[in-house]
Length: 172
Image (cartoon, rainbow, N blue to C red):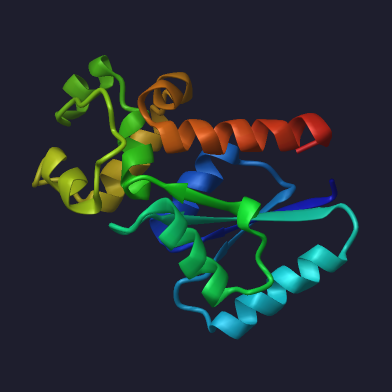
């Protein structure tokens, strides 16, 4: 595969994907503030180019998995349903999943083993109030324990298995 595109909602998602995947062949595109037609055309053009592929990552946003995927398909009709990866509950749950017990104590972050239901609001309550949210997210990524994270968050595990399958097929 020559190029792999990851469509994400916003800057927290972009930061996470860039840090965890960190590869020259991956292009991250934020879609939340772009026009739907622009992103849909982007997806359509990627599909037309051999050896290009994509995924769309989104938060579940208190919907069922089917409802969320249908909402993405309504926004981007050229998107394929199997290319939609839903983070449960929100991308912050993927961040906190990679904070092991030792790191959580050192960073003064509340430790939670299963992170599937961590929302942005719960994440904000777990981190020290005197530390800037973005700075703590950056620090989490510096110490990120991916193996632990995959065990602690089902949607992250699904994402990682999906990405690993793509890596097996190509040189990502």
